[in-house]
Length: 126
Image (tube, rainbow, N blue to C red):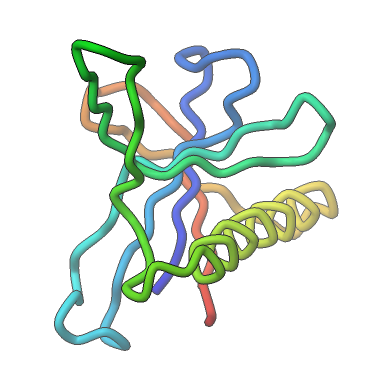
């Protein structure tokens, strides 16, 4: 599986760094050719990074809205999700550092709305 970081310059909130997609390959035959979208990488107020996952907003008439992450571990533990978020941050930092060193090639692509974005990939290991 690999990660794609999509930088939509000019069309993002102030601390938004990139949209993230998880693309499955032949290593996961049942999921080969599929991708998970809706993940985002954000710059933290404290200077680090944070990852948000696709979530559903549930609003009850008698209380505040609640959000439920759509990507969860099968056994209910937060460790796997925390590990995945850490891998996403590490992959982005690795790509960013290699970009600063001059040996990183970013491809220009056109997204679904016809706007130009930078897309960079990184292999994700467990």
